[in-house]
Image 1 (cartoon, rainbow, N blue to C red):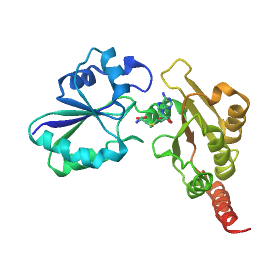
Image 2 (image 1 turned 30 degrees about the vertical axis):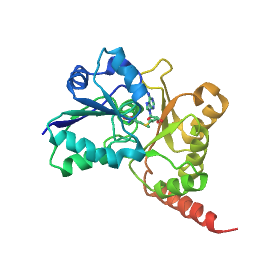
Image 3 (image 1 turned 180 degrees about the vertical axis):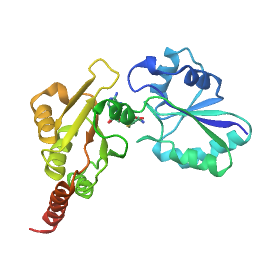
Image 4 (image 1 turned 45 degrees about the vertical axis):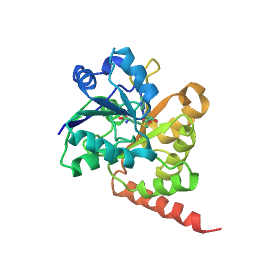
Length: 248
Ligand code: SAM
């Protein structure tokens, strides 16, 4: 049987593409990609002619079976997402699960991941952290999720887009505490890379007052609830937030 390679691609700076990632993509029988147009651009930049297979959230289960058949027949395949590490807030989980269930070797070609890159420059405790990915789009669900996290003592890591960064920071400040230390990493490895630190209220104010700070892609990291006093305070806020949803 062939091997399924899970290949990380850059999160902005194309020079972050590793030599092994290039070799793997060049040698694979086919590359499964989240967006074949975007990956096509990456491949043409590096002069790679391997054929592409589209991998979408809605065809992942059906595709997984076809890919497993190909792998069992001896083809080695690569899987990439639009940017960074596949499966991290990106498709691929079902394909990997199906391949593993069929006894196929699944091998990583590691590289950029926005969450890890952001943590590495944040200066927040990083020996333990919780990756939360994207918060829910709906305001009520988002606040509920944040309320559930208010007592968490590990550093919280969120992905956010320009559409919702302002609302999310406002909800974080209201739910987790305005004075909670936080760091916002924007456009990492790109031209307008910016890492802002302070507390949640400060970040919210900065983003609200400066259009440029709302542009691009973001990782927001929030220090965990601290000592007992802080934990009790956030627990109080959590209960209050939950009650607020049920009271007129
Ligand atoms: N699989 C990717 C990874 O390994 O980081 C994440 C994919 S997720 C669909 C896209 C989100 O990742 C963006 O909305 C943003 O939160 C974060 N992200 C991706 N690239 C980034 C960058 N260059 N700077 C900051 N955040 C980034």
